Image (cartoon, rainbow, N blue to C red):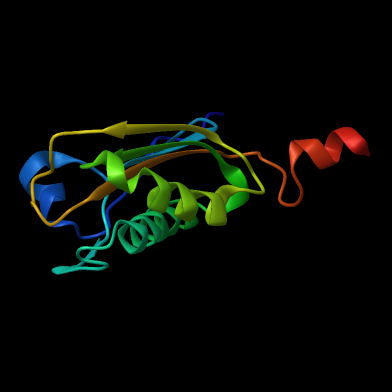
Length: 142
């Protein structure tokens, strides 16, 4: 029997006004919506793309944590930035978090976000069934 679609909210003010869930689990995938560094009404890392990326990814990882998943389950990331000068800073944050698991990644420069203080927004896709430890590379060596 297939598990029903499950949705998680995290309290973003846009969840109700736009009508979305922070994360949706369907089948073997968990999709995390565009996530910023806001926690409640506070924007973490204001003016610092590296800190905003770390906080946004932490928020997105917390969303997949609701399904019992961690960084090892992440198979795709998307990063949206408001300025090309921030590519290295956001890339460094991504490498620190995902360097061992190497998800498919996309980085795009956009015109802006709903709040002009936001410099970075991220999305994740996770696979429910990913091995709990190690990487594919390590499995191939075994």
